[in-house]
Image (cartoon, rainbow, N blue to C red; front, side, top):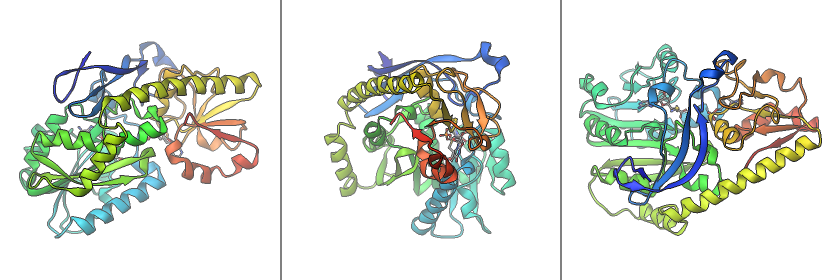
Length: 398
Ligand code: SAH
Ligand code: TMP
């Protein structure tokens, strides 16, 4: 049994994915011996309908000066954040003096879309390397975690903030209660919290268990967000499904005023019918993960038996879960092609598959390419349009 991070009650483990390294811990050969591992399991709290990691490394081990993920590395995501900002401006940014906070602002891709005179904003981004890039982009990036201690020094944003934005960051914050209390401290009476995160319902449907890794401590649903924020007298007032990261949900919350919201109630009903708000969905997911692992191992072994070569494409954090859970090493996948300078020349966490500059992908031929960055499928297939023509085949675990 494990403790729910919200209710502190004992909750059952659903799946044990086994020994896992840091998902984004791409490393050099000389560091293999001192690589860090932990046991990755998830449990489900029925009180708050929340899927959560049992153990995870300390945030400082992941969010530091070597954070390898840059929002702007995907054209599709850059465009998504432009649309997100335009939507927010139309709906919520009513005056030039609107005070905005973004958390997990990374290289500033989202906030860059707001830039103009009188734009009052703060960006909390603990990972120094990406935070520095945001600063160069003219963003007021604070290289710190978003919590009450770090917020309180910014007078202009205490009880005066109109909007708090986030994307793919709330699920990274182990102490969700501290996060909500910090929002409470920042927001004015009518302030809103708006964030989007990978959606549990999409993960169940796709059996995309690779969404689970050290940084993703929670897998949220509408039911869980509503229940957790209710504890602090915030209410969920709107939701908007997104097609990013294999299926995400954007949530809008504000201080409690009224309890009636037909749209949210309709979604809660759907989540109930699909067992997203209760433990049966999680147990079904466990069976599907085990089946998916067997099928993938069978598929890859068959390709190898035929003497064909397999490479990977996109050294994603998600791939760390797939490779380590399914025990796939460099005997099966020769190398992984990627665009990220920080990863190229290093080895994948745990399984130690070499990471190679994506420029060489079109020069060397692999009959099969495992698309680990499956959520960027369209963008990558467009970039590597010659691959299929040469007789190459994209594969995934999905
Ligand atoms: N919002 C961006 C980045 C997501 S990656 C996007 O969607 O592309 C998550 C980011 O959140 C990282 O840059 C990480 O450094 C940052 N982060 C992690 N914990 C945080 C916290 N407690 N407060 C603020 N930012 C945090
Ligand atoms: P992530 O899923 O952990 O964010 O990682 C995405 C990885 O995919 C990142 O290392 C960059 C890589 N990538 C490519 O190699 N080519 C591409 O066209 C895109 C969009 C991503």
